[in-house]
Length: 237
Image 1: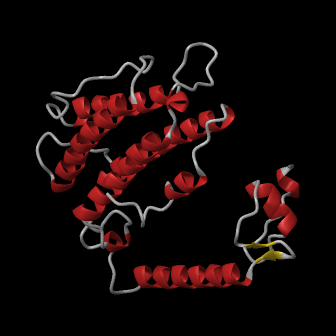
Image 2 (image 1 turned 90 degrees about the horizontal axis):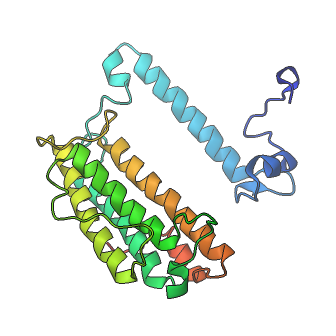
């Protein structure tokens, strides 16, 4: 679209036809008979009002520029705790285990590569190996006793679960140590929650590749298992 001809919409004005093209699916907040649902409109107005109120408070006479910084709050003052950090990481690992517990033996050997690239088991081996690489860099010594996996080897379900559980425990030690400022425990420069986000997003990306491979090869997981991947409040860690 020519920028000079661009049409800007607020959340209250997006037509359903445009929303369909933007999202590529039917988001639940869209009223397909008209546009954004009333609930979404209300949420949008509430969010805008809260943002305006926050801007007024941070620009008022009683606040300093330091207080307005999004990075100024300590984890505890923002409601985040080391327990929450650990639980998020354990939930991520529980999803890896959940998939491995339910994928078929044939599914573990599935691949979409025509050049000998990683298949399903290789994707999980890759997750383990990347964890080890970060342990070597960010928490020297924590990788001791852990062994890299060959992504092209015929790895069993038990091999993968055991390796991932072991490396997940070491990454947990890294995260907690970096959170508490322990020596030789270093996260990303932007902070421990950026570090956690990196690990989770990387592993979620490869889980997506796994699910796509299984779907294309006719080894799709049960719908109940797939839905449980998104039930973070319900997953036992």
